Image (cartoon, rainbow, N blue to C red; front, top):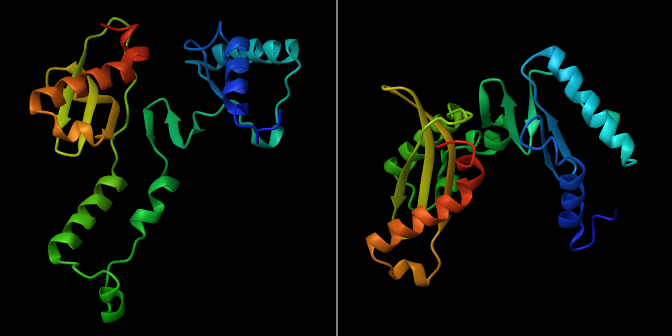
Length: 211
């Protein structure tokens, strides 16, 4: 399929979803031409791979060997590092920010007029957070989930998390977006309701198998 066409991505995604429908959400996740097969044990993984290969052969699909990795405990998927620990940011995504030089000379300072000690400290804090990002945890079926909402004059956000113990909180997913012009005139109560609605829409696939 020529991917230059406007609807090629959506069409291909529908095809892949139809092919792997019995496995998606259980042992397989698919995004266009990216496939990840997840298993708890090596023996299970062999069986799950056989199921995937069977479907690929059945529908005449082929894999590119140079882009495949089998039997690995961690790997990149859609720009994130996925492992048995959870989902975390890939180092490649934050490399540019971490390596951003601070204004040190008169010339570089003039290129970033208004740079103050507060700006420098803020950038250092951002770099520190990016170098130690939280790992997203996988929700357990029937487990209770909790959500924090945050609103401001220009954006709304939410974090979904689980509590394995009374003193432990593990993030499951983060969402945020900027406000549209008309939304900037909402009251705080309206913004909170908007944040809740937006988060509920994003978290629906996670809510279904949990409480």
